[in-house]
Image (spheres, rainbow, N blue to C red):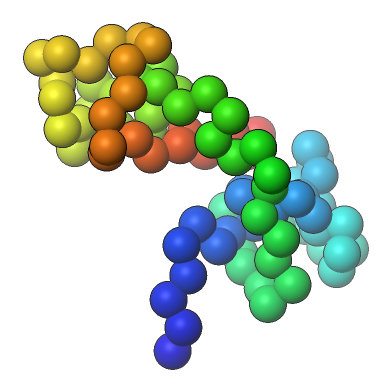
Length: 82
């Protein structure tokens, strides 16, 4: 079994704004993945607390210090799928 990091349709460049796969021509969700996965080139173009999935959540590593524009080694991108 292969282990893949961030290998879901929400991080793939083949995903359209309407949650359709350009390569396979089907509707997909964040849980989908395939062997034709192509990582988006600008996945982490502005990593900071404001767009971290852990910001103000129970898994935030620095809840007393976390603030927009800050960054730590526990940053996790928000899911931007509509």
